[in-house]
Length: 54
Image 1 (tube, rainbow, N blue to C red):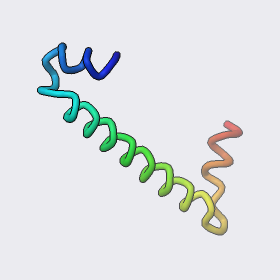
Image 2: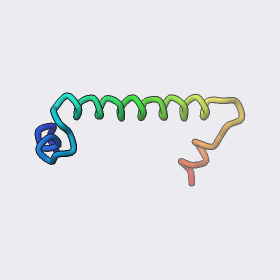
Image 3: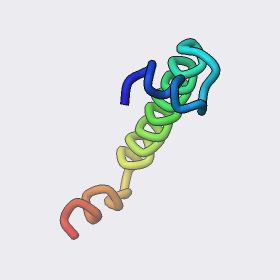
């Protein structure tokens, strides 16, 4: 869906709100990934590898 489509749906008042929400979600995603990467690189932590292997 496009920015205009989100505004037209009534969920957002304007394009700025849509962009702001998208950036907030991107920041949250990046923080989760950074945290996961830091946890996975800790000595003796193989949870990420084990999850990938199954």
